[in-house]
Image (cartoon, rainbow, N blue to C red):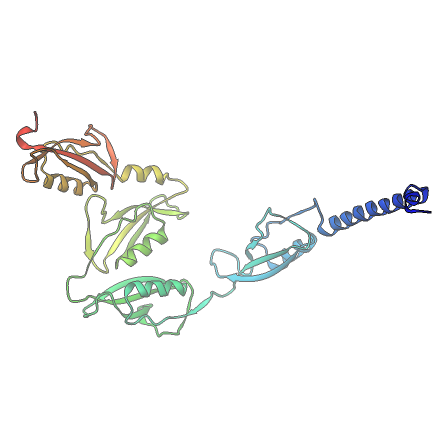
Length: 338
């Protein structure tokens, strides 16, 4: 039998049909096995384990055919000791069977860190190192010393604390700093609208302390600075380094800070008509506005120029955000109203 006869024979077609059927069955079986192995189309919702003990969480996890590993612990006075603080994946996440859930528990004892040696470092360096170790800056006081803003002593509970001493993470460390040779004054930064942590950090970096803290709403949930005393909005304020700034907070959960800041950090558009260049600079500076384009028309100089046009134009009651620029055009004083 030659090849042509074999190809068109019933035997060949029968074998080809059997091979095709086996191939289809093999592919179908492989796909089904893959689905079973990967649980295709089937997922498990991660339960909410936060607040449970490890033993309670383990029972729920095993019942869901999942696995778990305790990979970290934190200390938090507001949570029950040895409970689950959070986990990854988060509650409600869809996962496959046998997925590992990574648990973070609440430690019984606070985490301890070694006290770093801050002596002779600058204030900025000291703050950075404290933050790296999970510590914070407490009160700052200044003493006569040639090295301005250099750390002379590090203190805890009004006593000197040796480098390497174990301290609880989150502890506030007081710093004694050098005054330098001249007047050691610091410009008060604007912290309105900042979180409590960010405001404290900025004041500390400016060599100032946080003084009295007042929670106007009576709530400490997501507090932001609503007012401060002294207040540098209208004019720059300088204080002796180490002085305290009083902060007033409101809860960002209950108060619209975006609208408040938009109104607070705006100023009325000044009427600059007839002013000299020096007067323009003084008025804009007092209102925290910037000088934009200055156009001196023919014959006008800084000695005889007066404003005859400005952009934005003056309109009664019109406001501008602080920091916005104002363009002005000048004519010689004698031609102002021509």
